[in-house]
Length: 86
Image 1: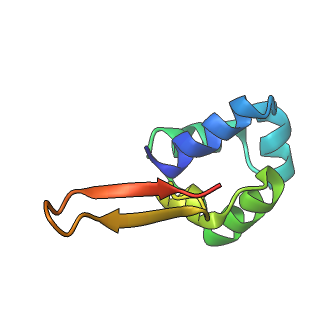
Image 2: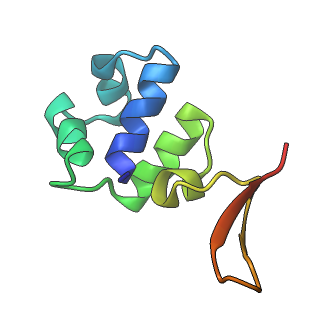
């Protein structure tokens, strides 16, 4: 999942209208749709603004990792896991 898809998912979860969100960022709705499809990506300053508005970390927006997620690797098999801490 890319950054645009994560943004769209959060908007849906929080019932935020795309038009309102685009207006807040000072961009056209089409730009956000281009983020969703990976055509473009938001600038770093936009990522910071988006994270503050949506109340998520920049790490989550950019990498899909929540602050409380811990990546671990099994020393026996090498398989990677995400440990979710509440």
